[in-house]
Length: 464
Image (tube, rainbow, N blue to C red; front, side, top):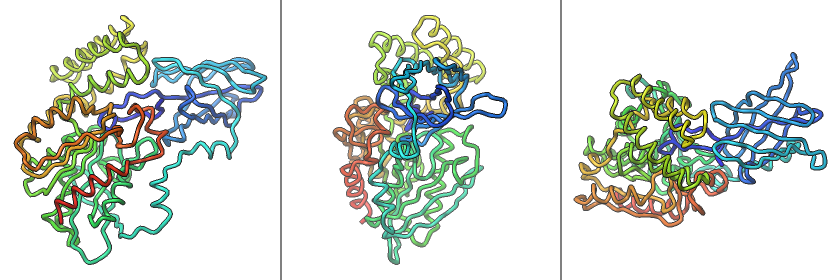
């Protein structure tokens, strides 16, 4: 069960989440309360009263570093309820005096139990997830240098970190390209700093790494809200150009590692920049965005426990929805068509009530309208550079069975292409059980050591 509101997902692409916001009430509801939605996702509710006597509350997911305000809170001595319109979510509970808890149900597409009990500072601290790989980095001084850098891309100044092995250099280098969403240089996803771990590992192996905050995110300037994959590709190209100005870098030994949307961007940049040395695609798409999103949404619904017949009906709805958006060049007309399709889906009980408006806003955004039309095959077919393509066997966002076949076909004439499906790994390249997004935050591992070693060994073979 995922609390965090994602961007487009990303990883690539939109993670359709189960979110939470939790209110409480008792003789005195003020203070901290905690519980687990469906016994899986820990949440913490902070409740207070303002001077006029009205309630204020925020709900946090410690494992995801996410919080949101609780809306429409109502309670008396025995009942509590609230809703969050933008999440199409609601909670209802009654006070259990014996258990000293609010016992109730969280509803968002499906219903799951959520019981809330008083929390203390110590009990909330214990809910913070362990991230052993990050803790290991923080425990000792890194055996490499890290420098704050800035470089310019069209309409933006991008801020990042350049990590350099100890010694005189010059060094081979990689640019890390994010998955979708408002990512910082660490690509912090569900409490995992994916790019921090990857940069640390590669730099320790003698490879300089540049990672940066997306435009309009973190310390970078620019407009994130209106940006598309094409803008992010320009930013990635600017990062490569910046590295070519640095005396510490071997300018003919620069490559690119892209995760999810970044795995779409890296081949785009390499296809128009023949001097780029190599590409690593981590869960990069192999099919047009419109087709990928249909599959991703269906797999997300299955993971949420939605019945197979309803998933099939939703799949048909998404096919019609995305096709209508792609076919309509006018943004306002696309919104009208999308609204009509989704509202009909609500009336037919294919979709939950109240989802039409937020989904129309999401899927007719500049990012999605562009992403739906992007066909990865053209850039992949144009690649002459060595390319390593990796997909997790359990990836439910960029499913290997759909994407790797298309990538193999597109790269069939490239003798330097290596394509691998990695057993038991999910979209984030964690060792997983099901691959569902619900697991991301609960898994302590940030990047599987086997994936790190494979990437490091292959890049070393290209640059040394």
